[in-house]
Image (cartoon, rainbow, N blue to C red; front, top):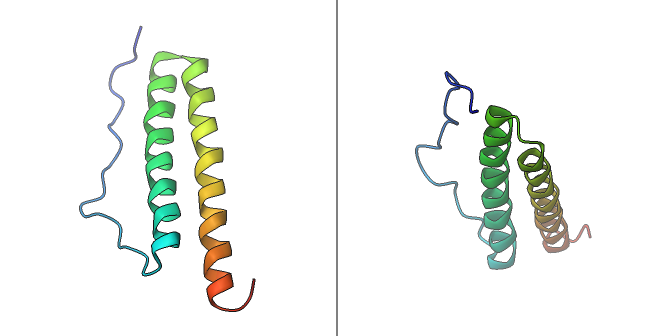
Length: 82
């Protein structure tokens, strides 16, 4: 049974700014989307005591973290550091 009284996740009032490099932007957008999905899954899992949803959230966090690594690698390559 779901618990009550849990606050909803805050939403950003405006979209995150775009990254000027299209390849970096694609990974940046995927990372933000995966983190948002992870947060929602984690909140649902915790509210419903559902370990499978928490595990699903963890999977999205790992994917989002990899997306961020791609952004950092691309930016370093552009800057001549990669």
